[in-house]
Length: 121
Image 1 (cartoon, rainbow, N blue to C red):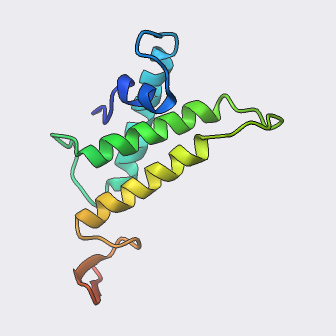
Image 2 (cartoon, rainbow, N blue to C red):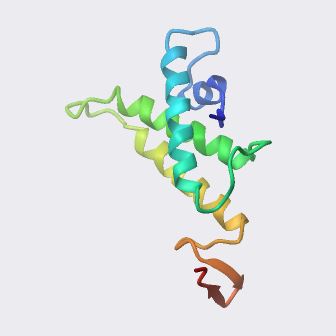
């Protein structure tokens, strides 16, 4: 399976310094998990593996991995800020932008023009 982002990409979002390798193994596992999710989310739109990986998908992968990483650490009773939703929404937004760049709208329909959709059978 293709890794769609790097440990460094995820660490930048999480503001973990590059020298701190305590979480690298967990982040590597998350990157693999997110790769499977990304391929499932896009299997109707593109053929895999993608080479090279488009930047938008690299950023989306890093967002979702950061979301899962943060989500594992925020306890419900914690009143602090939870950035996991922020990163998850970033993933979803970037995925929609990527599909749009391929000519699909939010409902997964091919856009023939600004005014019509094509139903693919």
